[in-house]
Length: 414
Ligand SMILES: [Zn+2]
Image (cartoon, rainbow, N blue to C red):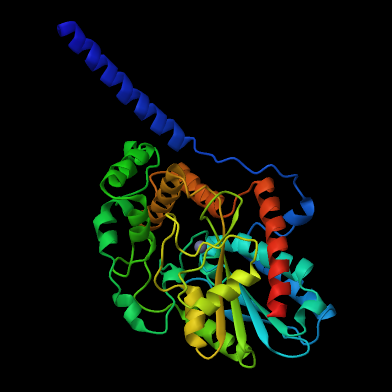
């Protein structure tokens, strides 16, 4: 009997050790595979290595459009920074050439560090897609880097630690929104003290997450974490206690530019969500059937994530919804493009993504134990939102070109 108990105990120990090693290895060496595509150098030129260089490239492409179109307007607005007077949002507006009926607003960098990819897509759009025959009745407004601080300093949030895509509304009641689910997870999401990326808790973060998953479903955890919160100014996904200054500035430009158009279509460019190297169509939920069917027709052949899958979550203070609110008398079509990087639709991918965000925010609030920790955490964040892989970059640029061409043709036909 004693012997059986001994064997039983040994088996348990081995199983636990096996599970622990598997979790440890799969989490700490997580590296989702790239798509099988041939690298195309002509698509890589749109990626720059800093905010300033991306902005310059955007401006150069915008200036070049003067050769193709009449009355192109290229302009800039400064966003106030505490210690930086060189933070700007840059615009390029090409009016419809014959009759102003429909306006496309293509925006990037609501989440600062995602601006690298957003800028690249905008440059491709200006250089390879915008052709005079597409703009008879369609105007295009490109908005570069809506959160220049985050772009320049490799953060997703603004200088005030605000997630700009949770900060957009016409009514300040947004800031009284409650998120009780978030409060239950506060400790896990916002650890205190300097970041030590090699600590036991960080190495075994997967187990911390699994423990939460055993208590709640992935869908409800994702919703609680991602919808935004308005209580903890140093916490993750803080939507603010006031509007960020660029919101009023953007509203003014959108109202003026769209004045003569009947229909406005916004595509807001993001990275980090979904299957790696895949372009996901991911609008915040839409109730209006006409808007839904119009979007469905324009994007025929592509899957739109309307909010019926398990991966889905809704957000408060969304930027695309905001444009609809300030233009109530127009047909308004909101869309979000999300370029996947870490397979966040899988459990390990979403836990990894969340862990990267937690460490980066902890570092911004409390600092790092060592320079090595700081370099590692920041490089991981950059890789999550702006993958260095040439295959990844080639694939998403090819897909963007194909989709944006179709969208422009179909938008023109509306
Ligand atoms: Zn984003």
